[in-house]
Amino acid sequence: MIESDRKRLMKGVRRVVVKVGSGIITSRSHGLIKERFAAIAAQVARAVGDGREVILVSSGAVAAGVAAMSLRELHGIPMRQAAAAVGQSRLIWKYEKHFQEHRLGVAQVLLTQDDVANRRRFLNARNTFATLLALGIIPIVNENDSVVVEEIKFGDNDTLSGLVATLVDADLLLILSDVDGLYTADPKRDPDARLIGTVQSIDDTVRAMATGPTTREGTGGMITKLRTAQRLADLGIPTLLVNGTLDDGLTRALAGDKLGTLFEAAGVPKAAKKHWLAHVARVDGVLHLDAGAVAALRDGKKSLLPSGITAVEGHFEMGEGVSCVGPDGREVARGLTNYGAADVARIKGKKSSEIEAILGQKAYDEVIHRDNLTVL
Image (tube, one colour):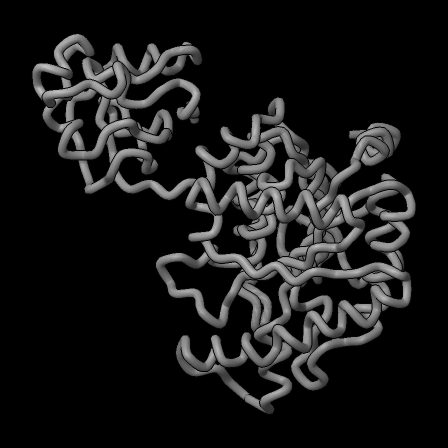
């Protein structure tokens, strides 16, 4: 992508999710770095003044808690959660203090995977973001580390920022990290390593370039950033990775200056419900399909009928998320089922006209309606 194309792309960005890495705003010895908070607040205020809507996804709670508690190391999940609880209040206070200087209010939004895996809570979160943005308030998002358990963790804030981008229908995910972007090799080890300005598609060659450990108290790394960028690209949302320690890096990035690495969008943006079904909804079971059913789903306009189901895995109830796999075991779609696992097991391979005779009643002709299904 030439520079004029990037400027044109950034000019069209009205809603942006900005992910702030812990390495940008914290240090092991001093905790939260006030100068970085001041810089971020000033640049976000500038973006808002230009007519953009900004959502921050900020790491740093654990690192801030570690510094506040004078800890050298974290041992076990309870200590990490305690550090997050102590650090989160300090983190949001810093943001509030510096955004107030620009007459902008902030709102703390703490999420867990459960908050977006459930359709109703997903919509509630979506509406909350919409209301905050309409009021001119900057949402500051973090995972609720103080209460979350492993089963419902996002895993890292790179993943969380990608999910927030889909949740709010963002035009761009801007990741502020402590690296300049994606290099052809590790620049600390290879003097010939080159910064890649634009990635059109993330393939095995690009993935092989992902090197480097996670940050100190953070959990993300280049591999997770690529995974997030890939997911968003498939949904029609570009990702820009830049060095957040650069002077006015956020402002220059949104202006279209050639900074960092831009991962281009690969497709047309999907509707919010399709976003949720494909990448957020929790999967509670698996439906195995025959080749005919797979072909029908890939046509894009068909519901899943019981006749195309060959086997059922898992324990799920009506309205819960299920994965649909073909004869080769590959996942082809996800959706919300109209029947529980026990009922699907009884009607699999049967015609819709036979459902009432088998179950005693027929609520739906299809196991998954096309409006509640997305093909992957």
